[in-house]
Each structure stands twice: as C-alpha cells, then as structure tokens.
Length: 261
Image (cartoon, rainbow, N blue to C red; front, side, top):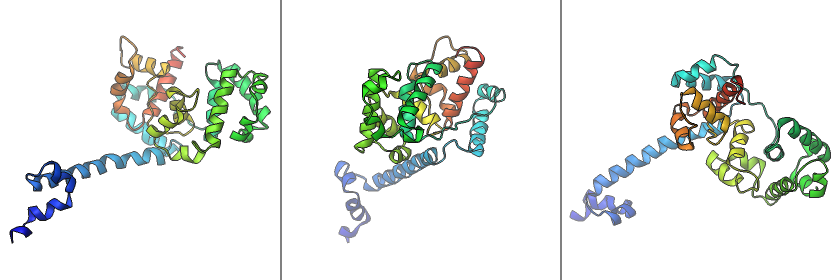
C-alpha cells in the first residue's frame, strides 16, 4: 500500500522537478502548475500585436481611447491633431530597399534618387531581389546611389534570394525576431527596423527609443531636463502599451508643431 501512495505516484510525472528537489513533491507540483498558468496568460496577449496591425479606423480608435485614459498628458495632444495614418502598402522587400535609399538624406534628395531608382528597375513592382542583383554598383552610382548603399542593397537582395528573409516570413515574425533578423542585413540598424515596423508593417506597439524626434517629444511632454535615455524611455512610455507606435507618432507631430523637426 505504501508504494501506491500519492506522493510516489506523482513524482515520476515530473522527473526533472523531483530530481532537483526530492522533498515535498506536492508543493512543487502545485508551484509548477501555477507557473505554467501564468506563462499562458502572459504570452497570449502578444498574438493580437501581430494579427491586428494599425490598418483600420476601429484599431486606431482603440489605440486612441487607450492612450487617452492611460496618459492625461498625451490625451491633450490627441485632441489637438488629426488621427494617425499608416497607409504604406509596399511589400517588405520594396519598403526595406526604399528605407536604405532614404538613409541620411534630406527628403527632397531622397525622393529624387528613389524616383530614378524606380525607373531604373522598370517600375516599383519590379523592385525585386533578382532585379537589384542585376544592377551593378556602377549603374546605381549613375542615379546617385553611393557605393556603400549599393552594397547594402545587394546584401538585402542576397538575403532574400537565399531564403534568409522573405516577404511572408517577415510578416509572420514577432517584433523581437524581426529586429534580430533584419539587423543582420548590412546598413539596417535598430532605428531602420523600428521605422519599418511602424510605417510598413503597421505594428501597434513599437517604441523607437533611439529616434531623436520621439525622445525630444517625451522630454517636452513630461518636462524633463535632459533627453531620456533608452531605459528611461521604456519606463516613461510603459503606460502607452500596447500602442506605443501611436504614442510615438504623436511625439513626431508634437515636435513638428514646435518647429523642432
């Protein structure tokens, strides 16, 4: 009868737990069950962040209602500006190529180079990995693309051609995985990925902690003496979750209105 007692029956069901702490198996089993339940609750809300991009008025309305109630300081800005719009419909590869071309250039100059680039490719729909790999650095220089940016474009095209990246795969990745995978591409850093996630993928909860405009907006909104550092940005904007992309959008509008951007 002793061999069939409950503690001995339950221990083999959790061999890793019983091997580490052989005493009081019933308490350990209870703690393990509780931890598993907590993990399920914490991970499940992450799913809508990917499945519900900021593509509809109803999603924007949810975001604005949340931000108004969670941050009174931000609420006054929301009432001062028109609702945000994230209306880019370019496929991921096209958006990333465009992002590389626009880096460190004034908007007017970037637009001019991009227009010539589109013509060179045969139209925006023809901006594909194979097309870019067929364009030599010399050809790209003729339309104003630097040698360094030409190498960035070729590296991006190669990673799409060999299957490291794909349009469909990018859309399915969570934010953390996307940041890891895209920063492997030459010329694409965390800031570029954040902009891509907000404006191309329309992800709702992205906080570009390295963006100067957003940092200046947060500094002014909360009356800080200095520009907040990344960790402080995370803490101050915690209340915006899960709509930090929208909160960031209002920081840009705020700074534009102040003549800072």
